[in-house]
Length: 92
Image (tube, rainbow, N blue to C red; front, side, top):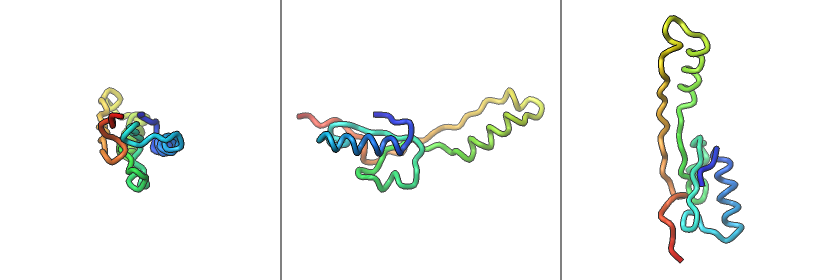
């Protein structure tokens, strides 16, 4: 399950456990944000890390262009941080 943010991923993991599902044995969960607490969830959350400070700086550059800056592409590459909430499915 790919979630829009880490808080939602925590909710999914909690709900999965309440239904007797094992994360990651029955369900892999991935968040987005890499909040500081993500590594302390159980299991530790696999998540996508984005440099939001750089994203903000570049957004301001677009909003306040100078010369050809408006046409400059923005490449901010997110990083997948693999932790314990993802894995091969367990066969029953």
